[in-house]
Amino acid sequence: MLVRDELEQLMELQHIDDQLRELEDSKVYLPDMISKIEIELAGWKEKLEAAVKGHEDLSREKKHFELEIEVAQAELQKSQDKMKSIKTNKEYDALTTQITASKDKISALEENLLQTMEAIDKVKEEMSEYKSKHEELDKSNKELLQNLRREIDLIGEKIQRKADERKNIKIRISPRTISHYERVQRGKGGVAVVAVKRKSCGGCHKQLPPQMVQEIKRGDRLLTCDSCGRILLWIGDESQ
Ligand SMILES: [Zn+2]
Image (cartoon, rainbow, N blue to C red; front, top):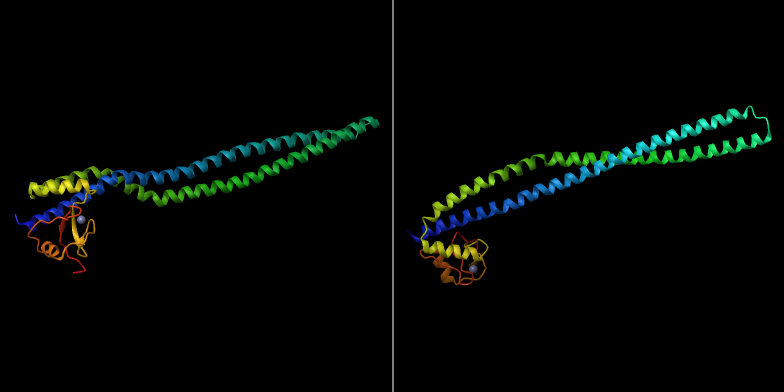
């Protein structure tokens, strides 16, 4: 096999390995993306539920104050009715005290009722804000979430397909070259074949001797970088 052809196969192998690495990474980052969206959705839902609960509590409180006001008003009415038939000064004084007490009680209860109603208005605003935030987020991410889940389902199949392609390429490269390739790959974060860029190694950026650049360009010999060991390829260099 011509070195030039072998170099092409190596480039293809590197390409497949890059895709495999990307697929492996996606096993982590795709679920991460999903859980970030889900956490945000759950956050708005939690806030909404807390506001709904707050609204229920406040509504109960409101009803309670309304009932107490009714009772106090009935008491006041009773005292005022009695006022029409009093016979002694002592009775009058006692009733007046009672009426004043009832009126004070009613106004205190009305103040409480007012505060509760204001709190209800506030919590209602919060409820509609959180509800729309949740709905917006849910709507805008629905398609994305579906796509991400579909992507995750396909990872295994894609990896299998790439692994098959890898096997087919691998058998066309000499075992010596493969073993060099795989050794460098393990040491260099998966990248063993790089293109010459600006007369330097595309992996470690070490400047290459001009004569070596010419040799790589010819492609009749497999050359590796002195500094990082990566296999060097010529795929055109804008600076040449
Ligand atoms: Zn290098």
